[in-house]
Image (cartoon, rainbow, N blue to C red; front, side):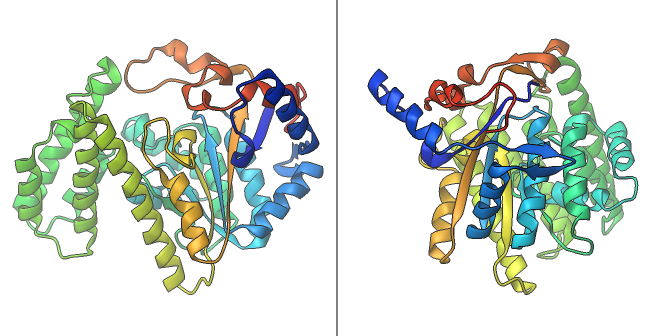
Length: 378
């Protein structure tokens, strides 16, 4: 990926339809632009000072991204080092809460990258989106290790991913209260692993456990385990049920409903983590939140839903604090656009152009790029 990057506060990314407005917009952008570098994992330069000021004035910084660009986790790790002295102690990411805790535990290992590789050797790579990419897991390791002994550094605020059930069902088998529960969890885990193979090998979404499992199957799983409220088994079964419902809606063509349910789940998970941090004694929990750009929209996103990017600023205001949104845009280069369905090996080095990215079509990116240098972070 080219190192030409643009950081743009969301408030600046207003569309400018006429040439005259474009010219005025470019002038405004130029007068409010500054550059920085990332040196040895740290932000350096005038832009770094500006971002430090942002961290000091806000309790939440949201980063909107395209997945699969290596410089984005590098920037996030460097921004974390800038924000941490201002009290930031949490990173919200696009994974489920159970997987988030699992990852945080891995990151505390002296051999964190080896732990991730071993996990992904046993399961499929997409069990840990998007931390199967080394740059993402290295970012997470540096952030988690910067706060030794801290709990819930990682806020997994999303659904559990479509191929997470295999390892979650195996965990259910480990903690099963009796033989029927253990055998049922093992049978479901085997079916899930088979579905994962079909997804990765043939792009068959319909065979994935999250899509194929029935209401009756889920009811049987819960009744067989009969988990105590708040127990580990209860959490796993609940997360599997909610995530499965979202994927089933998506697979059946109810995309709007699936997206809205997912958006609402992100908001609820954010609140759970925030309240838990408060209950442990944090007066003002502060977090970086790194998600796909569509989730960080303020106002209706390109899926016509109101995402967590709308919720967090309002939540901040209601709590007497502030939040800040960043859209992190890469210049032309290559990116890893491979996904476990509808992709080929060539997608791992796909040409990238932000001007053709659907999420950014509502912004006047041409004007933004006019004020940036060819190699600078701006």
